[in-house]
Length: 105
Image (tube, rainbow, N blue to C red):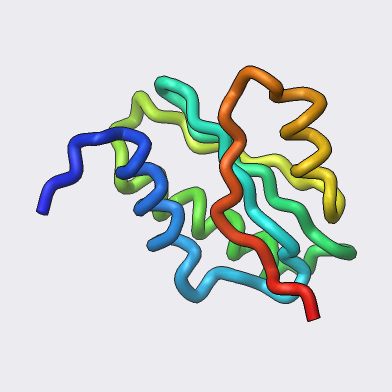
């Protein structure tokens, strides 16, 4: 089945890329979709290990493979809880979507 809606393609791409790539320090992952760019905001708790950074690179690479070279996949690290505040304060007119959030215990 071919999906033609770009937003749905991007959401499916990030979900597929996250399989096996979620690491213990990841609190949540947010995404901002622009016409030719996908911005990933990784909210992490604590320091990242080299394996964690490798997981981020793998997600970026797997997503990039789903699109042509004209689409840019970029990442930003953010402290825990900051994405919701950032979504409300800095991105009031854009769409910041939560694609992963660790369940509270």
